[in-house]
Image (cartoon, rainbow, N blue to C red; front, side, top):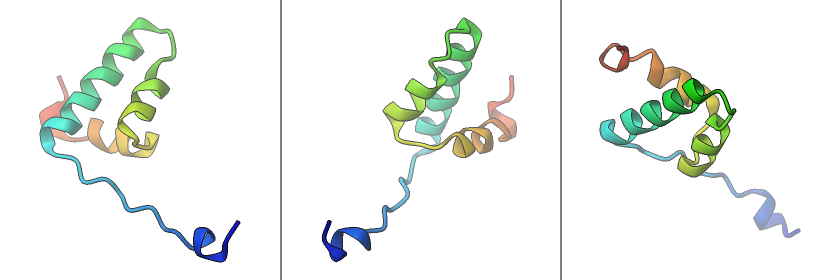
Length: 63
């Protein structure tokens, strides 16, 4: 591995409110199914589980 490759820092994705809500809905539906596909949703959107917990704490998203 090159030293330049080792020093690469990934930038965080800036998601719109609609994208965050879509991630929240997809993860909620995956959790309701109970098949553990929340990780698939997170991978598809390239977000961390911590980000999902932040989205679920937004008052507008709570049903």
